[in-house]
Length: 168
Image 1 (cartoon, rainbow, N blue to C red):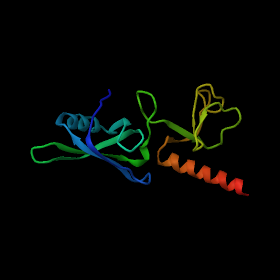
Image 2: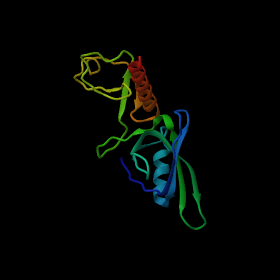
Image 3: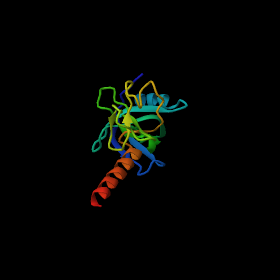
Image 4: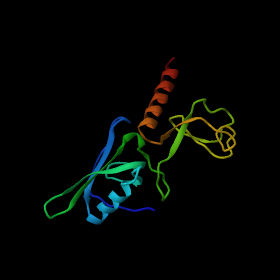
């Protein structure tokens, strides 16, 4: 089940490391606040398939989103605050469904037979027909949300290593 919820005057605070929490606040209707609270009330919280906020690229969070504050300003609107572990944040997929582009870094580097799409972080999105990462094998991958904190760190490390290698 998918819901679209609009928060007016959104304020998004993104943590700098995976151990922190991201927060999103905004003004909401009572109905949207109740719907969010019901969705986030489960054991694993809610998922944000596509989060768009002014000044940021589209983000997605696959679970553990919860409502941490509901504040009513007099007889006016309702200020709602959501939070989730920063390590779950990733870049939303380009399709209409959104969702995190989830990929993994193989513990043994991809060889010449790999046909999976590769990312700057060294991660791959396995395809079923890949002889190294497909359905016929059980690849051991360090999974992470694409475009998230871990992905950015790995991409930066690989970029620095490539620059250092050329300087020698």
